[in-house]
Amino acid sequence: MPADSPEDTLFSKIIRREIPADIVYEDDLCLAFRDITPQAPTHILLIPKKPIPQLGEAAAGDKALLGHLLYTISEIARQEKLDDGYRVVINTGKNGGQTVFHLHLHLLGDRALGWPPG
Ligand code: 5GP
Image 1 (cartoon, rainbow, N blue to C red):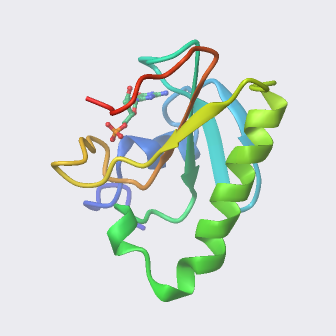
Image 2 (cartoon, rainbow, N blue to C red; image 1 turned 180 degrees about the vertical axis):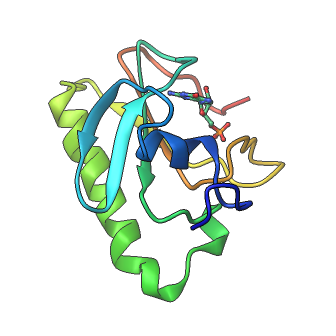
């Protein structure tokens, strides 16, 4: 991907280590790092290295990757000792409140979370 392509969000820059981040997990397919504006005492973002802009743009061929992300975030929750529970969120599109158009899963924990979300 060219460095200045529309798909080249700041998360791609974090993957390439051009922007610093507090990385908590990495494998061949994905990267997890702490959110810069945490909404809970533990707030981690998990992103695929493949720059899928949003959930609705994932292809049928991405099913295994999507499953890997969901399984991996549960492993990270275990690693973070979120034994009392946590929430996994994928904001999608304008009404979903998405601000960075590189698919990401939020992992929120270490406090009781309200429902419904705002
Ligand atoms: P969204 O609103 O798209 O679901 O989530 C984007 C998230 O990225 C937000 O929670 C925001 O705080 C986080 N974020 C934005 N810029 C940066 C950054 O440069 N570094 C890190 N670690 N997180 C960021």
